[in-house]
Image 1: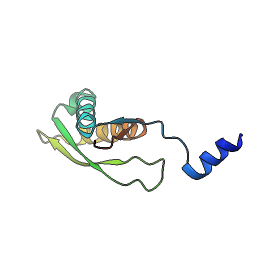
Image 2: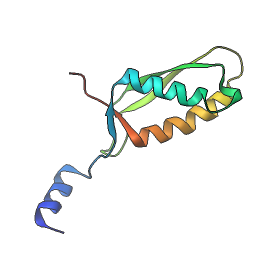
Image 3: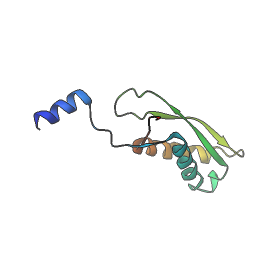
Length: 98
């Protein structure tokens, strides 16, 4: 390992390869993915995302704060949302507001 790489890794931490995305786009992407996940998820209307300060450099800077559902069937949508949110937390981070 080159000294420059070591210095960068030691002082700045590992690179974050997550793509920056606006919060509204992330909410829409999660809602579309959950709705398409199965018949149990048709009642899913949307999700509310909350920005948070990550505890470590590799943690996501957002979390699911709330869920909007149209009907009573919550179990199927909750399971799909948990899987999709976990995957998207590894792929995306909320972009800084300009």
